[in-house]
Every structure is written in structure tokens, then in C-alpha cells.
Amino acid sequence: MRLAGHPSILPPPESAEPNRSTGSGPARSRIAPDVWAISTTSLFADWSYEMILPIVPFFLAFTLLASPFVVGLVDGAAQFAQAGVQSVAGSRWARGAGRKVRGSYGYLTTTVGHGLLAIATVWPEVLVFRVTAWMGRGSRQPIKSAIVANATTRENQGIAFGLEQALDSLGAILGTITAVALVLWWGIGGFRTIFALSVVPGVIATVIILVIVKDRAAASSPAATARPRVGWTTFPPHFRRFLVAEAVFGLGYFSILLALLRVGENLLPSAGGSLSSVVVTSLLLYLLYNLIFTGLSYPAGHWADRRPGVALIALSFGLFALVDLCLAGPSSLLFGLLAFVFAGIQVGLQGVVESAWVARQVPAELAGPAYGWLGMVQGFTILVGSLIAGGLWTYVSATLAFEVSAAFSLAGAVLVLFARPSARGASSASSAT
Image 1 (cartoon, one colour):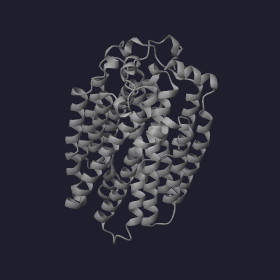
Image 2 (cartoon, helix red, strand yellow):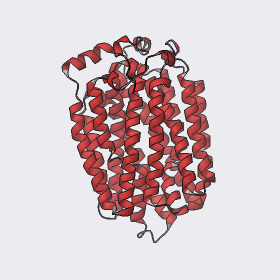
Image 3 (cartoon, rainbow, N blue to C red):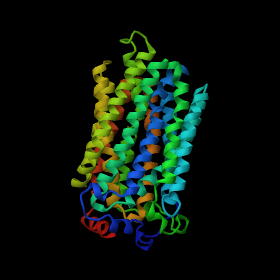
Image 4 (cartoon, one colour):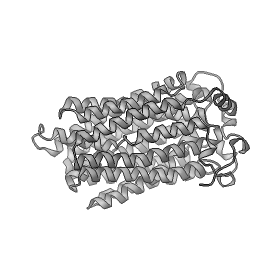
């Protein structure tokens, strides 16, 4: 791996001009227009793919007769593909003029990839289409995060990311409600029509980022290709320790699609064998998950601003162990309900507090690359974690699969506590931003 130069030799931070223009009024007034625009883009993008994601495991299991291992493989491979593209996007595409156009390609690719699920007849086709869609997602994620980070001040990055995640998860709620309504109307035979209809909000998201987002910070900075390549040693030591902890946690972190399939499997006997009833009940639990996620996102941003250390990140890792224990427990609606309640709290915390922590702990010019590396670690380990969980579930037992996941989650929670920056490192990061 080629190593980049020390951050101090890089050009001035892209966020310098927006940070001077945000003013000192109330938190709401300090949120830049680009943050609102990107957040709205996220709303429609999530509306699009959340119409699809919660029914994919049931499409695979009930329509294409795939095993839990295949469900884990499909989504894990998609996450891994996202990570590979995200590392490049963070290092090269998330900086410089024109990055919003590059981001729009990602939104469109995700939309088309998921729309093609309507013609899938065997699970390898689902694998190809999901991988394609998530490669598009990987190309836009660091761009979106970097635009938000560069458009905010150090003091309000938590609430900015909280707003983005809140609208993102509001889109997830709308997508899930749409999926529930359509499954109630058409039953499981309507899966393919739902896949096709998901294209509409996805196209709207693409138009918003192209037309409304201005991204003034990137417009006045050098092109990404003119900048030194960023490598592992470019980042501060405490950020590298954070990535190690993230990797350990990720080995136990599996796709929410496996959790949906597990709950659906547990509910099947009590539903009298009605597949449509199982899908609708599972989707309603997924809706509850998204409601909790949405309600927690903005408050989590305030908590991240008030407690900017790693304690909240450790808490979010530990909460996933509770999700595992509920899924490993007795086959009942109560434990399924608790699993999705804990999962909603966990995701609502993790996304915001990690994004805000990274924005504070790396120099502004490294924001895009840092989010790219974080996404790469998360994507690779979720592939391994999903294969471990799906494989143990299929070939040994579901209980063991979720117990192993819980062990990795707790180990990651402990390790992330060692990612606190030293006093000297914290001072350097503060002066850099």
C-alpha cells in the first residue's frame, strides 16, 4: 500500500469557508443549506431502497427457496462491494469540484440495481443486482458524509449528522410503510412489482442532489486527483485504534435482513403457516425499528456534541449484543419485538456518534478518506460476520450463531474504549479543525 504524506502538507481544509459563514445563532440556524439538501436526498434514497430491503430475505427464502446462509451471503457480499467502492470514493471522489455529480451516479446506480430485482428468477441474480446497487451506495456515502462535515462547524457537527440521519431514517419509515401496504394488497406475489415501483423515489433523490445541492466548499478547492494519496499511516493513531475496534465489532455484526428472517421463522408456526402474515408482521417490527431509529437520530446528535468521546460508541456496540441475545432466545413475538427495539436504539446511536466522532478526530481535509476507510472496514467485516452468522445458523444452530455474534460485539465495545486520543493528539486535532 502506498503511504501518503503527513496531513500537514495537504491543502487547507475544504470546510474553512463554510465554517466562517455559518454564524453563531441557534443550532437550527447554523445548519447549512447543503446539509438540508443532502438530508432530503437521503430521505428519498432511503424511501426507495427500504421498500426493497425488508422483503429481500423473504423473497429469497419463500420465492427462491434460499437458505439463511445464502441470505447472509447476498447481503454480506453487497456490503463488501459497497466497502470496496467506498474506500476509493472516500480517498478520491469525496474531495474537489464535481463530487455531487459523482454522488448522483451512485444514487442512480442503486436505484437501477434494485429495480432489476423485479426480473430475478434465481438467487445468483439477486446477488448480482444487490451488489450492483450497493456499489452505487458505496460511491456516494463518503461524498454525502464529507459534504455534511465540510458544511458544518466543529460545534454543530453532531446535530448536522443527526438531521441527516433523521431524514434518512424517515425515508426508511416511508419505504417500509409503502412495502407493508403493498404486501397487504398483493401478498407475497407482489414482490416483483414493489421492486419495480422503488425506482420512483430513487430517481427523485438523484435529481435533488444534482439540482439543489450546491457544495460550495468543494467548488473552490483543487480537484481530488491533484491531492496526495491517503494511506493507513496518514490517520492519527487513535483513529486507527478505532478502526481496529470497529473491525472486531463488525465480525459479529450481521445484516438486519438475517434478523428479519429469524423473526419470520419464529413467527411461522403461530401464523398458521401463512407466509403473507409472517412477512407483514416482520415488516411491522422493522417499521418499529425505523421509528425508534428516526426518533433517536436527532437527540443522538445532541448527545454526541455534549459527550464527544467514545463512550456512546461503546454503548452502541454493547446494545447489539442485546439484539443477539433476543434473537438467540425463545421463539416468541416478545423476543422479536425486543430485538428490533434494541436494534433501533443501537443503529440510531452508532451512525450519528461515529460520524460526529470521526469528523472531530481527523483533520477536515481527511474527512472523505476517513469515512471511506470506516466504510471499508464495516463492509468487509459485515461480509464475514454475515457469513459466520448465516453459516452457523444453517449448518449448526441459530442459537450458536447469535451467541457468537454477541461475543464479538462485546469485545468491540471494550476495544473502542482504547480509541481515546492522547492529550497531545486531541490538541493537534483541535488546532487542525
